Amino acid sequence: MAGIRQVCASLFSWVNDGSHSAHDDLYISADESVVARYLTIFREAFNKTGHIEHYKMMMGPELVEPASSAAIVATASAHKSPV
Image (cartoon, helix red, strand yellow):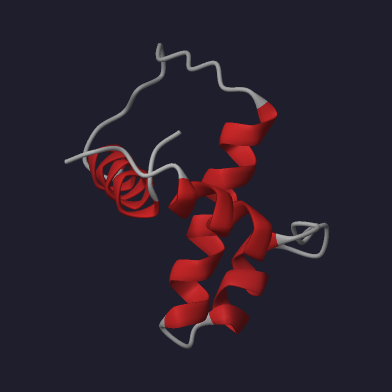
């Protein structure tokens, strides 16, 4: 499992690339734990910068908060990849 910094860098790279090009034919398969980790780190980026209300607005009324975002972040931290 990737560390928080690696997941965050991957997420930001994907977001930045996606804002400058269209990937209509791109298919990505990810298991639920990977999706949960990415969503948790995405949420934490808003939380740590003081923009959690913007995150909630963007995610909409059907937003389901992670059961334990601290557990996912802790798990990601514990499994840091050597750099």
